[in-house]
Image (cartoon, rainbow, N blue to C red; front, side, top):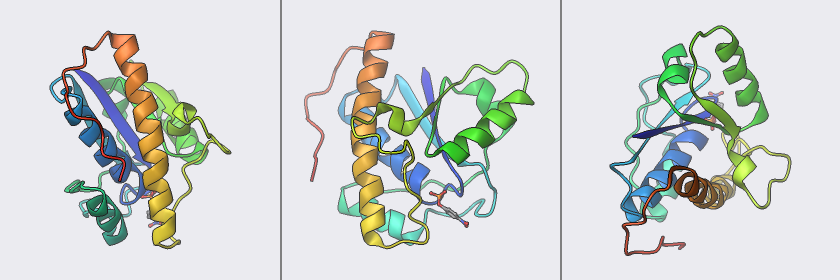
Length: 170
Ligand code: 4NP
């Protein structure tokens, strides 16, 4: 099983949306039994909460139901997950700080937008103080990055493509 963890600050906006997009994509590729995904936040402000109502709304508009409950990133995540995808450089710094205090880490840590053809400054912009357009932008970035990241995993791990349906880009 390949384990992938999406990480942002609060775990109620960007990372649960990215997780939902990527999970739908792996499912449609017939790879749900080969790739496990989860998300977490570097801060614990919203622990136990469902995603922000705007995150849930945008996801639903694209056929994705989110039921993730926010949780804080913990040292064991760096040991248990194969890939950690940070939503921005500040998240990345916090993850690396935790890594420096953790022994026997296995996770490879990437900026999610490392996989984006249109990387901009490398950050998925935080939509928390923004509007629905900002959430839609996070969705679009998540879609592009997830497609590229899944392609990367398929090549790297020699995964077969068992799916028949293409991803709905509506
Ligand atoms: P996220 O967005 O990191 O994408 O989940 C945020 C959510 C909550 C807060 C900041 C960013 N907050 O300050 O509570």
